[in-house]
Image (tube, rainbow, N blue to C red; front, side, top):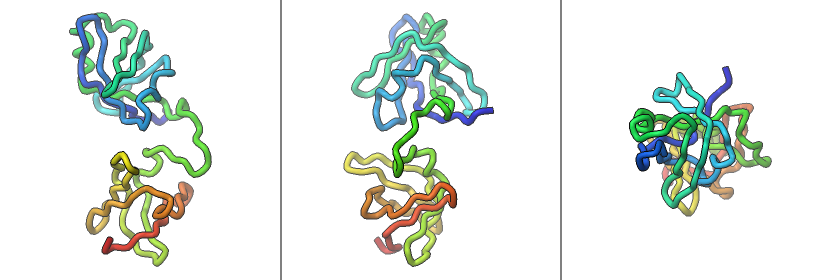
Length: 166
């Protein structure tokens, strides 16, 4: 079974004709707009495919209309569902660019060999993204080229120019 990647979450219905509001977890709000099929899941285990009839990108969320979801009551049943894609449908990134899901779980060490822990999540701050690293304590490490020296997916490691007392 192909790996699924969570790309957003349904916030609830919009109007009475089956439209839904989606909060995207993507850097660019319009990254879902070219996909004709989206998958939805309440538990991230069991996924259901939906054909996209129409989609519109707003300032804060995406409005979507799925084929077969034609009224508010049907749309309400999808409330709080995760929206995802098959991993293989994601576009390939240039070298040294990574999807957030690829960084989650990687070990983080500095040049002196200090192990900070594993990447638990990322935060988008506007200025730059921040790695949330959980180890003996939580570390917030900016995801900028001056700090992130190497990302190695084969060894599951991120090497950083960072100290424990920062």
